[in-house]
Image 1 (cartoon, one colour):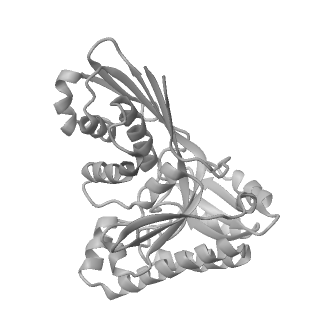
Image 2 (cartoon, rainbow, N blue to C red):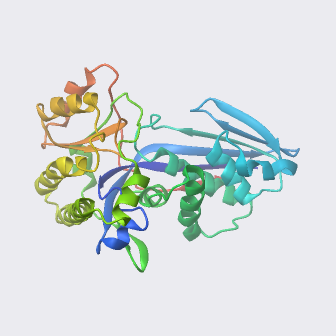
Length: 335
């Protein structure tokens, strides 16, 4: 039996960090806005005639094997820890090879780990006979990733991976729900440059420290998150109205506001790249993920995307990524 699964990574436009529980419970109307991109995370499973379990990450160049009889050892396996814990969770009763890879650069800040998580869950769930309905995938992904990183994890990345396209994820006491956004995809693709800085992401924010400070009553942090919430809702509203110039203005105003979370969200190289993009037709930068490296999405003046790409492509180490909005989310096939 061969099972193949893929899921799209994402660009987060607004609302990042507020998707971490319990932070969103302190900000009524909390929401995030993102869109899935065609840089996929992939998982391939092929069953074996013996009891061996072989896990391999092409991106990391790591491969190791265990067996069905030793599956309990995967609970605390440090190699490919996410994959190991997912296999331990699903506990397949047959041998198999599982190979993963990602089309997004390592440490890009495009939710590669969360996306791979969803792809692997889709494949493993198929392997064990569709044990869980798809509505359980996101809670499983968040809980297993929390076991890996040992702190609460945000939720927005799983929604883009599972459902694709552009969306606003709403958070509150009743739970979370995804609102698909019907927007002009062609305009979005025409006005956004996604740049890999060449610096793998070294998280610019320590989300656990931020969470603790917030719970401890840091008033400045509370106000920053109120602003993050407001910006996210404003981006949603103007995307739906098709007011792209207003979207650009909101994103431009949000960048310095978000940097108040940490002075390390951008690196000196990122600041240089932002200045160069802004001088060549970019309206606003949006650091992807938690910052400190990885990718920056630039919202550009209409008709200036090529100018921005040309200016940034000349920088050593930087790579302009080729992408489209991914209209589909998780796809699983098996035979």
